[in-house]
Image 1 (cartoon, one colour):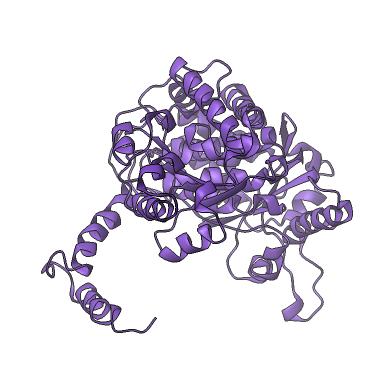
Image 2 (cartoon, rainbow, N blue to C red):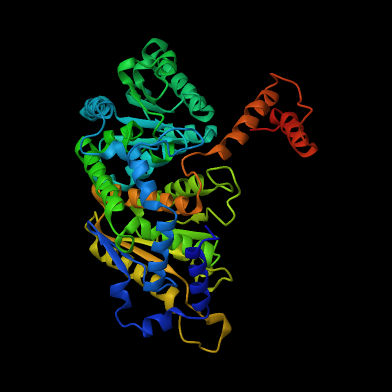
Length: 512
């Protein structure tokens, strides 16, 4: 893409903006804050505090056209094999259609029946066992929609293979009234199965091995392995190979979320997702929220050279959202070759991080305001809270607006270099009326399609994750060495072998 006229036009435009401060852009256009915005179904995207102009947006739209974004969108929505390295569709959008494929509709009906049983009072606690997309999506959404959840049902999430996490998650639970949902597409994920086996032993110690299986459900594309584990076929729910883990919240991976908030709220989330799907599919680029987010990301990453961005929700309920987006973006965009196997030729995936405001203001905002690196920020806020402490919400949102203003404009030079705030630091604000199942579904989908937009311009495949596999394969081999099942592997480098030797030698000798 960097050899195209559209890319070159953006490069020249970027040079013309060099040295132009955001203060200058606002002073030169009194309506900038009203013009450089877009809106869709209650979500407002204010991108006026970025180093860009209306011309930038037009040029970025031309770049999207050059990259074939509209064609790629249709290919994804039509179920074509856009996941080229695995030769299969990435058809997560089919999950949230008003009339989904028959097999999806049938699975949703089974999920709703199962969720109703869980919510009937039979179980006091539900523990979702998964990792990556099998954990981050439902954990994030369950925390986000706590105001809509059944309060009598204790929802917990177990992901880390560290035994301390199992101890923490199960602390205080009654095994006799605890249900585990094991989520693994292949039902071979090492961390998930290790936790599942430990959970089964924990249940069996309390209720006996014959009854332990009734305390488990599974979500998998490999039902035979789930049943071999002892889970009844009626409690095994389907995944499909055309839905990637980090795009799977709207599938049976969301079973724990449906149990928490109920089928109606879950369906509202799906409706919100579908609305943004259609918006992304049809809206012009200058009015298209996910496309704008992605194209501005391209502008910041490739033309300004900023290698990271922060996602800062001013909502405690979205405490896990930055981590969720971290996986969505970095696992999708962390590629150095194009879909055809040739070098990417330009910078791709940025580093994504963040945490909720106002906590972050007392952690890393110092660097955002006065550090040597510029970090674009995406703020997320809501006009109404899901609680009655309105004065707290006013203070929360005042901080969001103030932080965006301070980043953009800084403060007059006081003469004290330690108190100098240069400003000219970009940020985008996403604002909705309230955090609801519908608006959460919209927000998740905005970021899904933001990532897809960027991947299309970069020419990479955002639906595979081969980089996850190598370390897991090596870990399997090393585990056998640590447990004594095999001897030392002569192919290890001296550092790795030395670390293994030290661990094995001290594992049993160090006092607990």
